[in-house]
Amino acid sequence: MKQIKILFSLFALALLLNSCGKADTTLTITLKDDLGSAVSGASVKLYPSQSDWEKRTNQVGSTQTSDASGKVSFSSLSSIKYSVFAEKDCYNNANGGVTLGAALTEGKESSSDLILSKTGSIKLTSTSSNPYRIYFNGVQQFYMDGGTTRTVDYLKEGAYSVRVLQLSGYAFTPTDKTFNGDVKCGTTLNVTYP
Image 1 (spheres, one colour):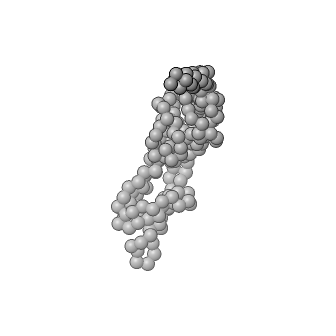
Image 2 (tube, helix red, strand yellow):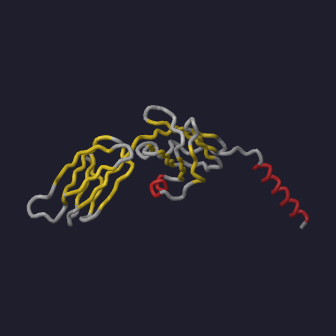
């Protein structure tokens, strides 16, 4: 019995010594705008996967705020590939690098740069009882049921064409309309159809 206690004590001591001096896995992120200037005062959240980022679930640690040089640091991390959401006013990284390029290396400090772009929203309101297919700048986005409203956030600032194509409920030809407008920083482009 005494030998078991000695072995157990030696095992516990080995674990303790192994954990002492073990380097921390950290991540430093530098935030810049489209012109390359540091973005200070931005809130930064870390997620263990892109799926968690999309759902805004399972945030890792607390929200950090970027310093005057646009930097934030996270510590005590796992060796995985993280996703990041950084935001200040209408600037965010939703249209660019949301997932880090590689998994972090255990016990090492990693760094990454994120570009924050100006974004706005498009709000679609259907006054029809029929379903429609929605396109932004010629690319199909989603379907909308009749009589519904949907807002799409974090769209990069710029000119947009929004095409609405009726899917059913027409006698001869479907309603097919295109609306043009600008998505501007922090604003919402409203599209009501048909």
